[in-house]
Image (tube, rainbow, N blue to C red; front, side, top):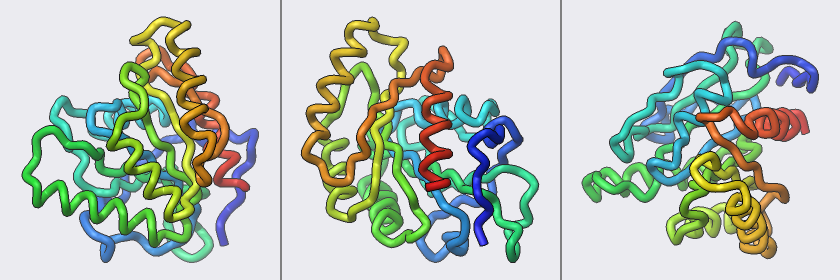
Length: 216
């Protein structure tokens, strides 16, 4: 059975570990603990946000090369065997970035199929956090992913990244514009979280959202 999450427990303060990279669906770990996944365009700052969220530098690989994350990368809190009832309370999945700038088309197609198959077929997936660069807002390839999530009825929530790169009034304007774009999307969870990995802004709100999602 899955262990419940104590809302007051410092789930994100304990060490987290990388357990598996999944290059295709047959390598997925057995369904057990609830999962949350992070998706976003290449260069959106996904690895940096995960590292800041889990307060562990270098856990998720960061790179200046778009498309560095080519697998579904699984992270769990340390200290669980993963056998029988000794399951971690949750798993965090770092998904391959989309909208790759420099990669062979065959590779892009392979990564895209992996992502789409995972979204359609993972019963333990509770929510996808879709990261949007605050400097650019929702772009066409972001909309394609949101359309897929809506069609698959997979709950998702928008997380703005790099909000320290724009001025506070621009952040407020972007929050309002993004909320309007999501208003008629059936699978979009209400509430947009504005974050900055560099300034550690919004991370507590994101941690709380994840705990509530997994415990719900």
